[in-house]
Length: 377
Image (cartoon, rainbow, N blue to C red):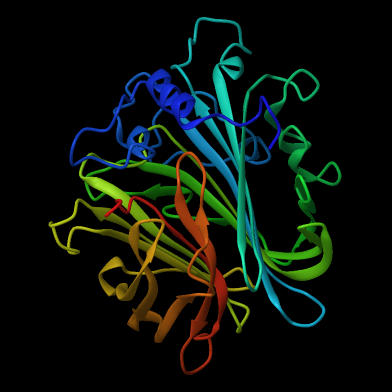
């Protein structure tokens, strides 16, 4: 790990204080998520009815408090062994934008945090970096440009390979671990939620959210110095918001699933405080087909049941789920390919590869799962 790039947990806590959230109070969110539930009156707010505009919205939105460019890939080597790759860039505003200041000043008030992780048949590794943002690629260790698209933190980068948004290339290296993948799309991007506004609470609040779920990946992973040619399916999620959660919400369970039918399925639930039951959890989902058909799922017909919990990093995590979606006649189990896919970073969470098993068409496949906000026990 390179000196000067990684922040210690103490410096991370100072970052949260700079953002203005302070430490989480007893019974509130895990401190790493607390910023997502703090009021954000001085920032722009995500609201329904605002159309997303491309290529502009591939870039950064510094008047919102937080956003991310989030890539996951389910990959296979030449022998059919499965691997996973994750590359994420987070942008966090350390103070509200000054609309009366020079146009580029808000860019300089940004902290960028990058995560890189890879899952092998027997192991999982994760890394992190931080840097202050700037307004041009040459002048900054971290940042994002919309056209041509580029998102980077030092030599960790996701970028267009030409003037157009697609295809994309992702590269990252940490010591003797690295990823280098080419990404091409086989179907258009998808606006999540209501035309790109993704609600996270029944009483309001949420994010702007779109996905590029139909990505084919090919390239190479390097694990402990060993180069491994791989190919498979990838999924890019983009979100930005100023208040992602409400005070009684503690975390989420998120699924991006590649079905053997060629369909893609996005599901999530935002959880309430423990002891308040599952009835108040906020659920959303969409089924997406290669021909561009998108089916929003009725939240009242999304059933996510934790079948089994496993102890990982001092937490009881639901790594086996049963999913019932009667609206689209689907029922299957989602299970982690390996238990310990813990992101051992300053704001820790579980993120890793899963298998999908069920009877009938569209009830088998692979994907990624993210679990946040589960407390130490």
